Image 1 (cartoon, rainbow, N blue to C red):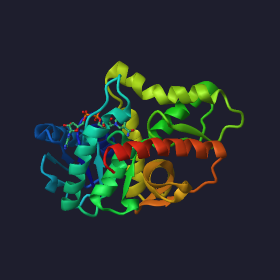
Image 2: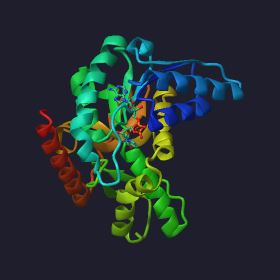
Image 3: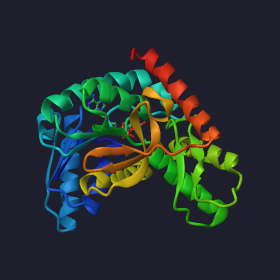
Length: 295
Ligand code: NAI
């Protein structure tokens, strides 16, 4: 098993650190435009692994050849936002980066699944899919998994119940929504207030500590684990739609089954009217932005 990383900043390196602890991997390849950062992270991670009695091959650098033969490649390359920015503000800059990364991944490791993390993740997932020429099941983005973790935590604070299924769907951004049709809570607490807490949770963490990375790392790990261990976990993630939920030519957060083939299924629940309207609203926003980016 080999996991590749493009981008070894705060989020990429924390995902790699999580994978070393939680998974059995034979090899990890770390790529960053800042070569020494990737090499340094590879060294540090190899020392961490030895402490767990694990000795995977861990390599770092700027040469995409290192990625060859990766089962899955995790892309976090790009800029993060500052407290005054929305995720959409990052779009133009990161779109250029993702376009370049897509080409290099396909040249060097054409069979890998690609997990996109770079924000705005729904747009970057679409661009990665388009520019890589890969099939829809092989490219997916992490956003709503993390949003849903935040939702669960906030629901727990309101209800002191561990809720199994509570999902945020739609854009990983300001138009995200709580799926009221797909939630295991009998009587709703004030969901509008909870949604607003979830929406701004990341911005608050960024304001206080500069970035989010533990939450994103666990969310990404769960998706990587689903693929590598073929768990067929049902998870909300950003995927390219082709008619599902009446939407096309867009990547957006919906429930999927994730397994060894990547996106094994898009689970087309019969959503409530409200959920559907919210999903379409997110999709319209993202479509407009994609158009601005030339897609
Ligand atoms: P960071 O700045 O710590 O790391 C980004 C890394 O990308 C840097 O090391 C940089 O040198 C590298 N990089 C930039 N251009 C590159 C290129 N062309 N090729 C290879 N490497 C390149 O940022 P951080 O905090 O790790 O965030 C990374 C991205 O992930 C941001 O866009 C952020 O908004 C996003 N993010 C997404 C989340 C999600 O839920 N989808 C959650 C948290 C962050």
